[in-house]
Length: 498
Image 1 (cartoon, rainbow, N blue to C red):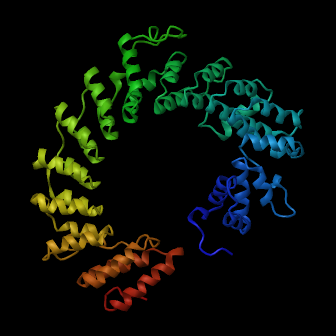
Image 2 (tube, rainbow, N blue to C red; image 1 turned 120 degrees about the horizontal axis):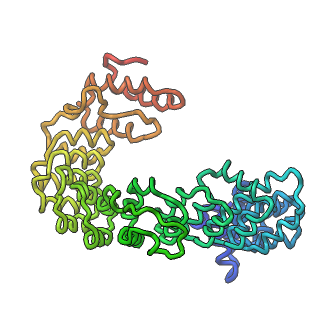
Image 3 (tube, helix red, strand yellow; image 1 turned 60 degrees about the horizontal axis):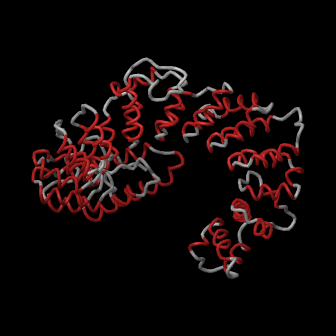
């Protein structure tokens, strides 16, 4: 067996990939030896991966004696390999293998190969449910990739009805129209519409908005009514959140004309003149949350949009310093008293420093509290040194409760007179052993035992033992280990039970 294996040989896939990359230039003995010594499961993965990347020669060389490459080829998506299976007669011999290739061939866009595979087993047997199911997945795959010719051939086949029924049954959230809209394949959308495959129009709109597919949205508005969806404001808010400027510009144009007739002359229907933008909840907030300053600039220049003070708060919370500055400079709504706390919670020190210069009155003890609770050591230290209003000894307990012992130690040194656990809720344990798979709780107990053993009061031990008794089942052995340690080191307690 190999001794120390190179990092790039850590899995069958990386081993095969490395072999394929290097075999054309030099014979790599270590790679070959690694592949030869794979266990049965890893060998199977290696063969399937070799087929997936199109190296049939390597795949065949790895097949164990008494086995056939056919045993590993089900579901292979590489067109060249599928062609090879076709040429070798495997797809004719094994109908299930042929069925497994349908979806992937449709995804890759090879209509001729798709037709050849089907002809091998045509006419289909009476019991052809597996073909109908694969046909449905193939339609979805072709719609996703925008292969109009393949969609047309699949839909116009006699398996269409059964395939569509299977889609409704097994993939209710993946209507063909919705998948095409998601990727902007308008030609496919038009074909599906002409064929009467119009299910999922609302899902199609959701997908198109999420992905910023203006052409899909434009087409959908010309063929379906979205009056109820328009009233949710989601189209504008999501476009702002995801940074789809072109989509916002499109809806701005639509609202400006108050009719879709001028936006797209080939529309089949004109919707009533109801504004999309008027129903938006707070696009400035959503753009600020995601840090899309270009969206904010466009809205400021083109729309009279109001927002709430929490827009700048959310920008600060997620560390978008430039957005925070921009909102402060260009908007008049201000911020809330929680803005610095929001930034401290996620440890955005650069934002905190800027906020302290511009809103010094917003600093509070809760900022240090949440920073300690989330283990943001640099933030805790900076607040302690620069914001006296942030000082709170309760942060020591929160750091311990959350498993950040180093933060707790640093804080305790600044509040030496504070009795750890004194301000924590009376019935709330300082160390929570609720998740036995998390070793941090036991490690915290050990750290407290070494550094602050005066924490182990009767009340502390009572809550700890209650927790240890409460959780059981398959975690019992782990909890028993902790219980034994507690009893060994702190035997005298009202709740001492064995």
